[in-house]
Image (tube, rainbow, N blue to C red; front, side):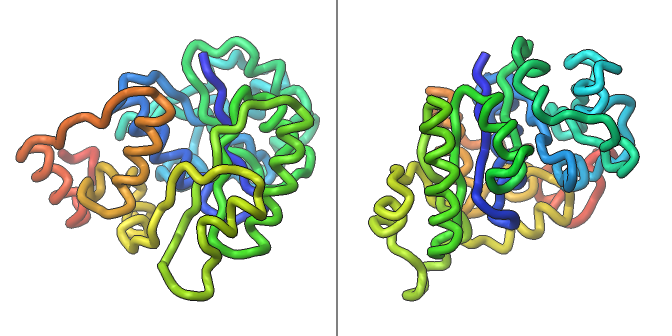
Length: 258
């Protein structure tokens, strides 16, 4: 089983959004059994972005030895498998994030690790627990320089780096070019996610973009990345019936009511 950490040098870059969409696509469209793990204990967003707020067990419990890894994994109605972190401040007590590599040592599915930003203890723990690293940045100098620093940590820990995903590209002149990003980060770009309002709408609807609007321009990048990671060709387009389901979801009907 593979363990892939999604890493950025700063917050607000799009790690969790990428983790959710890759987790959904890999597990449901590419036959690549995957669980998304929220490794950001202090400010977890994974379950919130999927509309889940109450959990029987969390990664905090696993780190404390109160639950086994498989007991804390849950499945969202959309088909995203996830291991959430607790939203309760009290659950941070007596949690050692440094134990993350050991508790994730023998997973029963591939793991997508939604890392905490930067190179603090939480960020280092996610990189340490992973076998492979996928960096995400935005086309601005500060974000790319932070990825450079994270890349050096991954190199020191002898992790396989898959490359860099450039998020939220608008195509304006003041953005860094791909060649400039690769030069600054000293890493190859393997995908570019264009700015797409449909991503924001899908997040507000608590749905992966593929379910909210399969034809959204950013969804193709997510599919291409999932194809690269899984080594599987992009599946054929969904049927007319599936398209109707997406339309109903986009109009605000509850997924649970379909």
